[in-house]
Image (cartoon, rainbow, N blue to C red; front, side, top):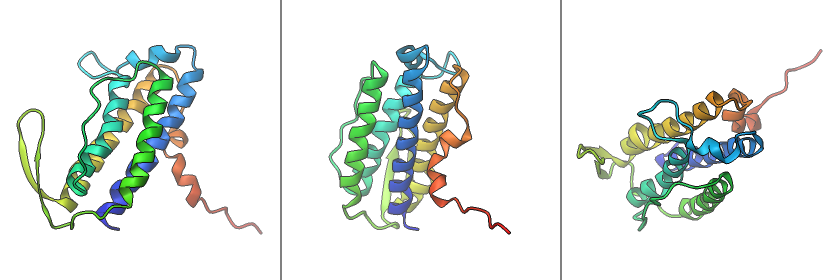
Length: 171
């Protein structure tokens, strides 16, 4: 599997997962108020997790295909806004995935907001930073919704796995 396959599929799978979770959140009694929920006082709320998850594919593509991308700075105000943000980003990913990615051994400098800088190859960046950070925020979004009483479970988080499901042999 190439670094392109890894990151594109991770983005597609988890943004679709997030959309499914938010679909259930829209029907929950707390509705849009869920966007303000967080796991701990020093953590960011669900709305910010959604924004991060929608920004991360573009931020990665800026490094991997040379995309000119500006991150969205405002959190979605409603679940409908969040789902529209996801839908737009999924459409972007389809376009971006058709582009040629830089070679896996190409050097990338990663500077994070606290000023720390890392020197990685494109393959290392995808494997060790971009995909793990993406899953961290997806897992956090799931955990926030679960902690707020949404009736969700592992099947909701890894629903994309059902396309691989093999039925047991009978007889």
